[in-house]
Length: 211
Image 1 (cartoon, rainbow, N blue to C red):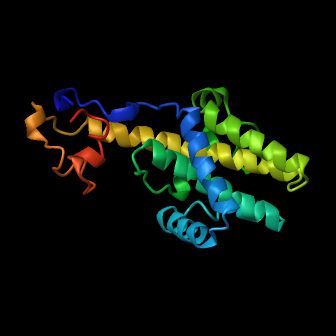
Image 2 (cartoon, rainbow, N blue to C red):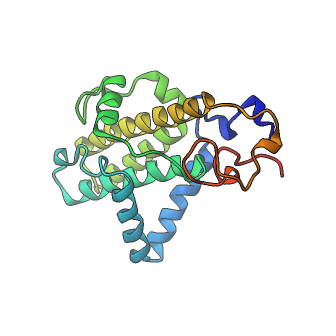
């Protein structure tokens, strides 16, 4: 990859639509864990989620009155986090309470269960939001969740998706402002990535570049 152009793999310099196949692949892994009853793997993933995203597990949790809704709250947060990690090469920054509040304001949903997400996010991340909305409708049809709980979780999912969407775009913009290399040789694929996160270039902003 020619680093002089400072292009980031998968369009990270802009807000990018995550394709449906990524969403489906992540969810399929969760289904496999559930079907094979690999509880230890789910627990480890949940602990990693709580460690890396401490602001997320408690966000909107008090609004969900039943055990099934609380479990869905954790699961949907896990799924969205995993989708963005998958799409961005395993790296997403931790969201803060401020990130989540700003996301709620952007989609005009100051509280969990508020008005629906604005069209721009719905269009940009339609694969994620549509997929999760369909799952929630299934939960309502099987009476796993009530319609009110489903609406609250749709709002929660929209806010979290928006927050990660913006955080991903901001990470790309920060990389775009770094000093640019003038040739590919300036940054070897096994060299530390110039973004400063400690990972190898080939595993970070060099992901997807030709060998």
